[in-house]
Image 1 (cartoon, chains in turn cyan, brown, blue):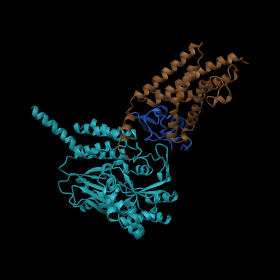
Image 2: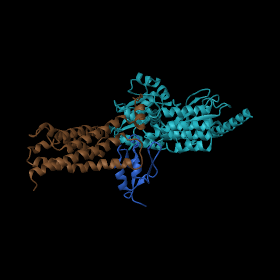
Image 3: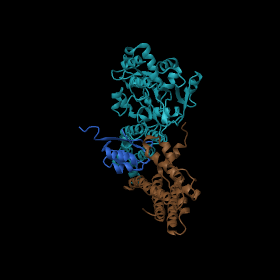
Image 4: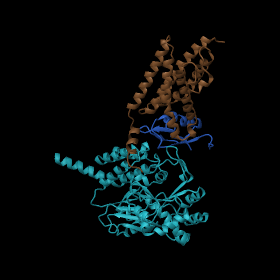
Length: 362
Length: 189
Length: 66
């Protein structure tokens, strides 16, 4: 078992759920504490599809990864959204499904741990990592539990089969290995594709048919990610340093090409409202801050100015690191990128509106 | 050495002081639980006084109990300090006082251990304070000797003030609690 | 360099915090409050004695030391 951890360390595998934490460290702690395993197959982020894709196309290898890590014990659970095709496929394969409500924060790892312990699928404060066990907000004991993303387990199986060197022949030194990406939205062939860090973003998008000339914006990483312009995407590199330039990361592997026929301001509006409505209502800065952020965005859109932009950036600063989970921070990051990308356009609209108002009056 | 009747009066006096202090501690706790937005240092003072006065109250309570037993004026056994309704004198009314002491022990011990026990256990047992306060008020009011209307009125006033605090807590709204309850009612499991 | 004994590292359990604001009154150099009364930790290093008092006084038991 410790050999497996060493193998994963040599391979440089990181969690494919978005946080990119070194898997070997998690596995070592999980073995030491005999932690129970929850396989995260929720595809909880907006635009996510790869976990379900693995269950559909590579279930045997996924199960091999599960066996390598924890064995398929009565305590191993496969978390999937209730009523989803993935949950049905897992159940049909005779696997123990942890049915998760279709809420944005419910697929967060501590939410799943809480749900598996008979609690609600809402995030818990991590005073220490739950792989060592801990307590839920009511003070009840939580058994040592490790949550691994479906793709991470699939990669573990592949690394065990093909070796660390094979794994490192993909991607970059810092971010090795093949990685799945879900490409959706305004593309010819939306779907799940194999990619690797360090590839030009345009090449990755070309797997799904590429961006047409009229595309203006795209999202990377869903609601917890960023929006960038199509012009930027044509020269961007698909890895964490490359995405960091635009405030994002490679995250859970999601690229969404925004339909140019839809107003990007409305899209941002919709996503911020969704983010506010999906607060689990547990942390004050989130349950009040996210609706306030959505409101500040609307005000900014109505009247773009230095003042309204500052209101928005001040609000964003108050969301960072002030929640049990990363949801408020993720929405704040998205709003920051939306402000950066749409500011010129919105300022232009405001000038245009003043011009038109002047013309009708004149 | 104080004679029996002096001890008896000391017991009455410390009993009333205990009821007054307890009512203050009780009201400060109710205010903390149902409080509005934090303003200045009020919340800290309320919390600090709640904690420290609850300890100060114990001194008066101890004198009240000891003097009531040793005065020899009426017959109350040492066992009646912890075991309710076994007193020879006024078993029911003395017993209510004993009951309040027992509940007080539960609340004090769990509060002392608060940082070492699960929060829900502390919280659940701290609710006992409401019953404890009511029992103490009834005990104080019913036993306040008829020829001491001042003591009785003081206890009555405490009852009215504490009751008002409870009513305030049930009608006061709080944004944090409202939002939590609203979202908690959604589907989460 | 100050040893770890000289300072306490404070943190807020955001799920438990209901915004009483006592931590900001007890540790004004480390904590301020947002518009709803929830703490903003401006400096997570605090005097150990003051920090311990603030932890004791927190009615929601949300403030803790790391």
